[in-house]
Image (cartoon, rainbow, N blue to C red):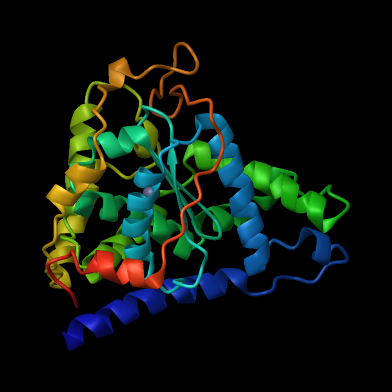
Length: 316
Ligand SMILES: [Zn+2]
């Protein structure tokens, strides 16, 4: 529908505008080349790869090509509608019972085995991945580093390479600590719900997952995993519902059967998640990880993505 297409373009351009603003060159200094916090696409990818390596070392990787292939297909369908469709999007399933998802610059999106267990259908998975794609699109972790440069003590590297290494370490730390403030989360939700709908998925999917996660974690004193920084769930769910109404998002695919065929993990209650460190107040984040860090590389062709998308019941 024409009005919907225009709306989506407007949303994506809006995200692009804030990205361009964040990249405008700052004050010139003698050390600008080394310590410049505006990163080229190539540098952004290098930083994201660094963060991804550290996440794989921390949690391990599910050594299952079929699971990676399925998650990659869902993620690719969603990312293809984004303003940064040309990034080399990479989807990684981390080997931990903790429920979490992490994005990293340059197109790296991670989701845990525990999250896949809790997710009940493909629209929920698409919603979670689209939210993470939204964080990457709007360069939230990069922007966070840019905002906190002074306190960060990042300026003592002698070479650009050493500087990027420092930034990568910092990005990993803030990724685990969940750096996003409420406006970042709202922006990622705003982009994500539009991307999921655009791909043909019922846009309420991410809300369905968040509601289940809130119920699972209701008894935890501290917010856990994806809730460490996320805006209060009730506020978020209300906001998601009002966006769906406001923009007349009406895609309907749930993908229940396809999800059940691909993902067969059993959900783990939060107090049963095995901790990597004793006495954790954040069991999902501090959950034990698997021992195999090797990346599971899957490639999906444009034709395979198009074929996969034909399985969705609604297309814009
Ligand atoms: Zn988020």
